[in-house]
Length: 211
Image 1 (tube, one colour):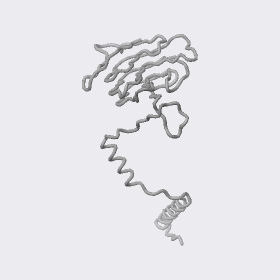
Image 2 (cartoon, rainbow, N blue to C red):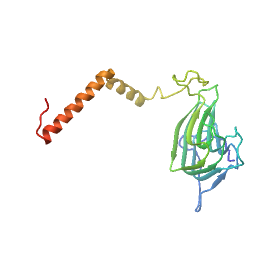
Image 3 (tube, rainbow, N blue to C red):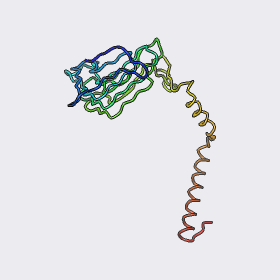
Image 4 (cartoon, rainbow, N blue to C red):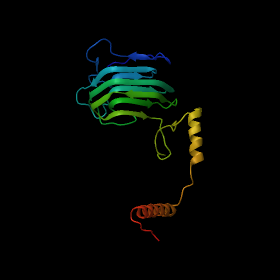
């Protein structure tokens, strides 16, 4: 298992990449939790790699991943890149979030410090023959109003309050939002539009006028 530590910095991320010519470097987990485990780090890039994690038949709770980025009570982690990486042959238990098995995973955990990823990029990569999930994010902090019985702490950031672009988009959406019509009024409006379109078609091609 490849489990490095330490973070990069904005503009100077830590980069794991191939060099020279030939096949992509192989990272094989052999049945570990992940072939590549990056925990509580940020500013990382993985490029031009071949990753697998095949071991003995997994037990019912034996989760496995090809690449696992995991933040626990970390705060906001920034800049994660996976580019031209092939992930394959990962046999793990059949679990999804908040702690899944899969190919390329970004997982948030903990209960003390609100935590999230900011800036995930996965490009030109392949995932095949993995259990259970291909590419995914999961978080123990996500709690939506429609799931009031969730055990999550209840912090689910959907936007940056200080982002002027997002604030502008929200203002434009509110300004252009028309009041909702009752279902009967919407049906009548659609019917009038259809009748109008048919009338124009018939007058143009058949010389018939609807009355």
